[in-house]
Each structure stands twice: as structure tokens, then as C-alpha cells.
Amino acid sequence: MSKVKFYSGENVPLEMHKVRIIQKLDLVPIDRRLQAIKEAGNNTFLLKNRDIFLDMLTDSGVNAMSDQQLASMMVADDSYAGSESFTRLEQKIEEIFGMKYFLPVHQGRAAENIISKVYVTPGSFVPMNYHFTTTKAHIVLNGGTVEEFITEEGLKFNSDHPFKGNMDTVALQKLIDRVGASKIAYVRVETGTNLIGGQPHSLENLREVSGICKKNGIKLVFDASLLADNLYFIKAREESCKNKSIREITREISDLCDIIYFSARKLGCARGGGICSRNHDDYMKMRELVTLYEGFLTYGGMSVREIEAMTVGLEETMDENMVNQGPQFIEFVVNELHKAGVPVITPAGGLGAHINAGAFVSHIPQSEYPAGALAAALYLVGGIRGMERGSISEQRDADGNETYANMELLRLAAPRRVFTLSQLKFVVDRIIWLYQNRELIGGLKFVEEPKMLRFFFGKLEGTTGWHEKLVAKFKADFGDSL
Ligand SMILES: *Cc1c(COP(=O)(O)O)cnc(C)c1O
Image 1 (tube, rainbow, N blue to C red):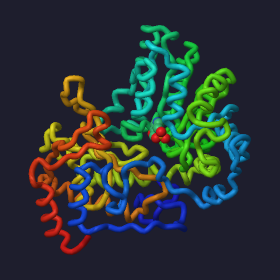
Image 2: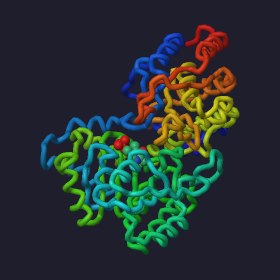
Image 3: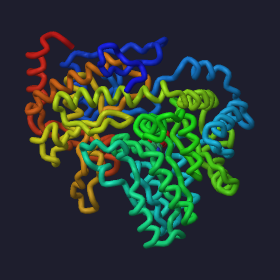
Image 4: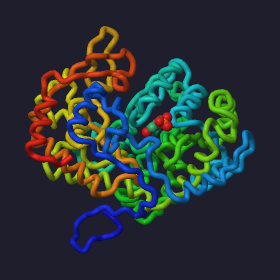
């Protein structure tokens, strides 16, 4: 997979950068980890960074910047209006995406707010391959309905399909036939589908979707937040793209879309976001809302330093060695776990490794939150912070009943260029130990359950005294190791 082959034949991902600034990490003793996870109510969102060894909660805003990005921040042009930093970003966007108009926003969801406010009307539909949390919320808030047309393959735990993020174009056409093109606010394609494991779509699938949109006079809006990973997968897995450069593939993608928006907390390894378009009318409609909600058109709620870092980060994303770094390291983790018999989502996607908690701790009923319990247990045994993506992340219905998630997942995000291979080997090692001792892990129950967004702030406790038993077994096996 890696462009650099090892003589041994082993498939080892290789860091194509060197570390020049470091942040010291501590792995606190397991007794402190036990205390910390209890203080956090078994909710990894509530842990303090000082108690965490490897933070794999998210890839948002925590990707490592390059020396060139940091250097660019020193020459940022600070001004409210007409900043040179903004002009440089605007030019880079046009160079990469071929889109003339660019609107800056403070992060990805701000772009969604503006696009939804302009195009979504009450009673309209927004078909997409799969939703993202903030995307759906903004569409619903404006009276629209989200229709998800992910292909059947996309929702399987294990598959060898290379493009599990593809949209079912037959279902898309059927919806258009049923409700009429005028009822469709726009079609949205999310690249590197976040909530189903960072799974990619193919260029061919996007071409089909774009063809349907053009034929029916519907706008195609592309959420490019996770574009870097998807570019890698298109180049690695799509036969017709093997000999194309990342820049060429990017341009082919953007030529198929009307509006591209992104979170620069992910794409471009900075913070902020933006909306790109090729149409003057679209630009003018969205422009007013940018000044209202974000800030003046040459900063849009971002600091000029972040704007400079974004410009350099986007250019770096056009480098194959750069876009390789996320997916190849995730693939290493997924393949090592899979070989050891640990249930994981396959094939590996971008964003992070996804452990099938429902199968890992199959003795824990969904009413006791298997994915949440596994997240707490992994922190306990390794100081590793993942994110529960299961029923805790869902909300109770109007009558107060649980709505259980389709999949109980533990997501281990891999921020780009942050972790080394030995750190990931440590993660794999502790997960394998945990799998062999999985019967010691017990369920969780809420002690504090907020009505809204309970996964952020809710607190839980073990249904039995399982934490102490797990700690005792850890000490028996690991001795005085941290
Ligand atoms: C993160 C993300 C967003 C939202 O971006 P923020 O910068 O967190 O507001 C939107 N879409 C996708 C696909 C994302 O991954």
C-alpha cells in the first residue's frame, strides 16, 4: 500500500515527515485512570487532557500543522477588510477547485447554516449519501427533510466493497420522480462519510450523481470536510484514477459540483471553513448571511493566522504523501486488530478505526450501552480516549423510550500526522488484551442524563463493580507497567 516497500515484504506505513516540535505525554498510573474515568462519569468527553495518554476522540482541529503552515502564520496580514491573507486563500481555492467565489466561515457547521438558510425551504428534500449530525440539524431547522441513499453495502459491518460511501443513484432518481425536481433543495454528497466510518465514494459514483442533478436542474452540494482521505481512496482503489495526480482527481471532483463547502478543522489541517461556488447568483445569496453570522467577507470569523495556515494546508493536501498518512495508519490498526480476531469495521476507512462494540462485548445488552462501556474500559487499560458512537449518542423519543443505534461502535480517530507507529502498536496491543479479557467488562447506567446531547454531558456508572475487577486483572498481567 505504502509507496515505499520494505525488503521484508511487511506492509508498514511510513511517516513521510519528521517530528520537530513535540508535546510531552504522560501515561498516568492505572489507579489514577480508575479515579479519572469515575470522575468523568464514564464519559470520555468529560476526561481531562492531563489524564489522557493518546487522545483519539476526534480528528477535528487537532491535526498536526507543518513547519510551512506555522511559518505562514507569522506573515498573516491583519486587517478587518481586504486582508492579503484572504486574497491568498481565495486564489488557492480557485487554483485547486476551479471555483471563482469563496466565502469564509468560522467552521464547517457555519457553512451548513448558510447553505441551508439560502436553499432549504419548508417541505423541501435534501437527498444525500449519508448525513452528518450538524448537517441534518441545519436542514431540519429550516423545514427540510433529509433522505439518505447510502448503498446497501455501506451499512454492513464487514465488506470488501472499496466504496461503501457511494450513493444509490436509482433511489435518488426515484425520489426525484416521486416528489419532482422543484421540491429538491439540492443533492448533497459527503465525501469520506463521517458517521459510517470514514468510508469513501468513487469518482464514478459522483459522476453519476452529478449527471442526474444536471439532467433535472438540481444543484449538487459537496461536503469536502473529509476530502483528503477520500482522495487517497480514489487514487488507491479506483482503476481509472491510478495514474492521475491528487490535484487532477480533486479538479475532476470539483468540476462535477456546484457548491463545495468544508470544515478546515479537518481539510487543510487548520481551523475554520469555507464555501466555494462557481456561480455569481449563489455567491450573492450566501454573501449576505456570511456578513450577518460570521464576519466581514475577508475573514468570516477566522483569525488571519488560521487563514494562512489553511492556504498552505490545502496546498499540502494536494501531495500524495500527505493524504496517504491518515488512511494508511488507520489501515494498519484495523488490519492488526482484524488479524487478532477483534471485531472491527472493514475495510478500513479514513478518519479512524471503528471497533464493533456490539460484537466485542456481546454479553452487554444495548440497554447498558456496550460502546460506552468499551470506551471507558479502553481508557482504563491504556489511557486511550475514543468516542462512543452507539446508543448513548442517540436521543430518547418523545415518550422517553430509548432509540437504539443501528451499530454500537467505538471510534478511535487518528488525527493526521500526530501519532507514530509505535503509539498505534500500543493501542492495538491494549485492545487485544482487552478483547481477551472482555468478559470482565460490564454495562453502564445513567446517573445524570441531560435531555439534549446526552453524549456530551451525561454521567454514567458501572452496573456492577466491573472496573475494579478489570484493574485487578490488569495488575496481575502487567505487573508494575503503566
Ligand atoms: C466535522 C464535519 C462537519 C462540521 O464541521 P465543524 O468544523 O466541526 O463545524 C461537517 N461535515 C463533515 C463531514 C464533518 O466531518
